[in-house]
Amino acid sequence: MPKRPYVIDQMISAKSIAARIEELSREISHEYADTDKLVVVGLLRGSFVFIADLVRELDLPVEVDFLEASSYGNAMESSREVRIFKDLRGEIEGRDVLVVEDIVDTGHTLTHVLHVLESRNPAKLKTIALLDKPSRREADITADWIGFSIPDEFVVGYGIDFAQRNRNLPYIGKVRFTE
Ligand code: IMP
Ligand code: MG
Image 1 (spheres, helix red, strand yellow):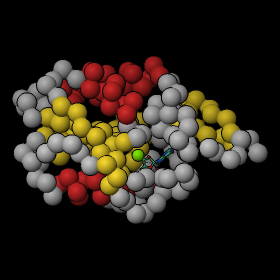
Image 2 (cartoon, rainbow, N blue to C red):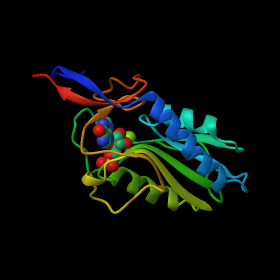
Image 3 (spheres, rainbow, N blue to C red):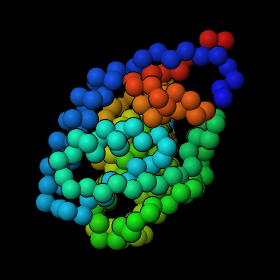
Image 4 (cartoon, rainbow, N blue to C red):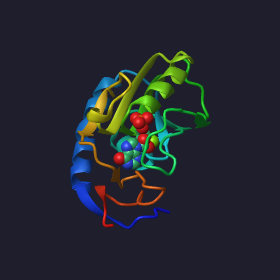
C-alpha cells in the first residue's frame, strides 16, 4: 500500500483510449491479415486491461499468452535487473509474436523480454505499448506501435498500478502527492 497520500489527475480519458485502440487495431489487423500464426503476448500485470480491449478489436485468428517480467516492484524507480517470473505457456517458434506492454519507460524490460523471445526463433517479433515515455529512455528501443507518448509523469489506471493499487481505474491518470 502506498504510504504517502496522493490524488490522481486524469490524463487520458477512457473514451480517448478506446478511440486510439480502434485505430491501432485497424493497423494491426492489416499487418497480420495474411497469417494464422499470430500470438499476442501480454506482459503481466500492467497490460491485462489493454490486451483485453485490443484483442477484442482484432478481426483476426489470434491466440493469447502471458509472460511476467520484473518491473517497478513497489517503488517509483525502475529497476535495472529484469527477471522472468512467469513464462509463456506455449511455444513461439515459427509464430508471429506481438508483445503487448503497458509502458515503455527506460526500455530495459522490453529489451530483455525481446532478447529472451528472439532466442526462441519466432517468425516475426513485434511490439505494441499503450504508453511511451521517450524522455526516460536508457535502452535503444521503440515499440512498433504506440498508443500515446507521454511526459515524465508517474501514471496509473487502465491496468497500471502504483504499489499494486489503481489498476481498476478506467482511465489513465497521473499521481500527485498531497503531502
Ligand atoms: P522500463 O523497463 O523502465 O521500460 O519499465 C517498464 C515498466 O515499468 C512498465 O511495464 C511498468 O510496469 C513500469 N512503469 C513505468 N512507468 C510507470 C508509471 O508511470 N506508472 C506505473 N508503472 C510504470
Ligand atoms: Mg510492466
